[in-house]
Length: 121
Length: 108
View 1 (spheres, each protein chain N blue to C red):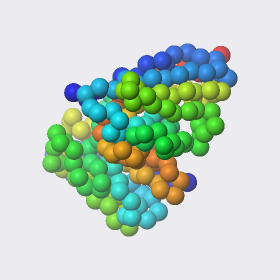
View 2 (cartoon, chains in turn cyan, yellow):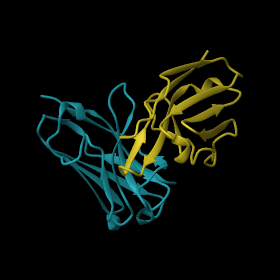
View 3 (cartoon, chains in turn red, orange):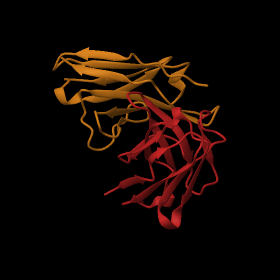
View 4 (cartoon, rainbow over the protein chains, first blue to last red):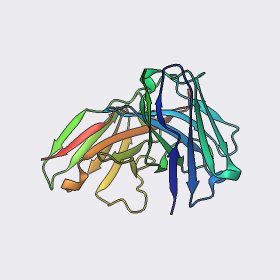
């Protein structure tokens, strides 16, 4: 069974950092691109960042570029999101998602259950 | 940046057909994907590449895409179809994934 499990969320003050992790199982991790998508409370889906199968290609939404860094460790079947200089508006449920190809493009055929990040003083 | 526009809400009676639109500049030239999200749950892919269905998705879900509008059609709507629906594309000019704002489908 394909499974994605996020961890690392929590309450953090504005300006601080947080690192999210996503543990993948049930598929050959290094055959697929991966993404982070977030959803602010009561709002729609917002793509945050994507990475291709071998980490050669990384893309970021304008709202997080320069503050967030996506990475992956294929040996550990894990995806990461390093979030620096966090802002109140980064408060959201963060989902890890798998795409159907190596290239880091949609669609996303598997999603984790999400991890909550709350940025507040 | 590329923008996808969806109606915020749509109400349909059980057994009727729901058509959820997704507007974008020349969206017909892109591959459109659709997700269903029920309250408290992660999104689920229901249609990809305009009109293909992942395994396990009922045939009642179908899609089309032409010109400036893509459409997700749900035939014979059931109470269990009540959810938020999002369209999605890849914008190759910016290398960004783009989501529509979402449509809340209410089954009367």
